[in-house]
Image (cartoon, rainbow, N blue to C red):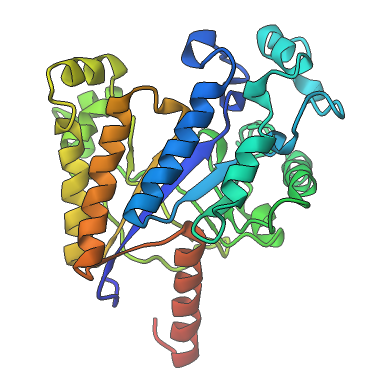
Length: 326
């Protein structure tokens, strides 16, 4: 149990436009000109302002480029493998550059954090990416961002595949978003298999909460996700919206926020900006952020970035070492 008197709310966004789908690009998933995705980012920023929420925006480094191709940074290993995506890259498509997106976020940097989400969104799986490539991804991101933002201290791994933690530690990172802990229902002998096969079933349960952690063996603080905001069947979401019951699915997250406030624990909601496609999607976020704002007004919760919470965790750990506390 933490010694804090309040809970903590973390909100992280994997901000990648179309880069997250380099190997599985589907045009229907995105707007044709990238305008809807940009409007979504502006609206999420506005909702955060309205409710006093600090967020961690994890950026793919390729988005720091204003236009393509200034310098051909398309990965050599991908050439010819993903022709539709590569064609977009060669054409300088707005879904693959984000100088304007970066500017929006930099202008809000006093409230929000900009984090690392890979330079190309390549997966940091240690079976697929060696240490040299991991260092190269970090160096390329830093180089692209050097004129726009300070060096990041938070890593949100592409596709939540955690790897090469010592490399990130040596590069100055302090924390990462780990994999969402399994619910108890996942371990039950009869229904656990169904929960593992259909992750959206977890939406009916309060998301897993965690205490303020100590740095792990890598020296980084693991701040795992609690619930993916859109980790549910989109078709089912639309049916609920049509029936005027779109708020139903957020009730478990709201309950988790209330429990985190009451028990001085951490609740961590995450999503992708491109997933906000309808007014109902923003209503879901509004419902969540309003619940957080209520707990903040009560003095029972704080909204912080991942970097801020990691700093608190490192300070607590250092204090324990200094006093000989285990």
